[in-house]
Length: 102
Image (cartoon, rainbow, N blue to C red; front, top):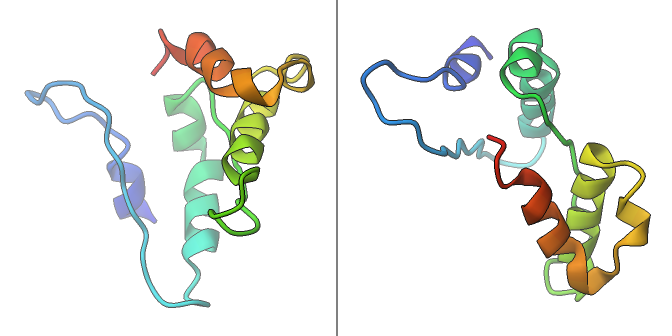
């Protein structure tokens, strides 16, 4: 877990940019448990002012799958607004809210 936490830190001399860290492996190895432990760590909480933990149930082929993920994120960063936004405007609403945040 410490190695994953160290990936959250900026590296001096490198330009600031968005990064993605993947956790891969066979079913039952503890990927979700590890990701949740990093997410819940004090280091991650200090590093990011806005955070959201979303579970993606179902199949990506279903039309509502991405809408439910976006709605779940919006509910966590703007609890009162998520239910007022229709499916067509979820992405735009979330993008507008997050545009100046890291």
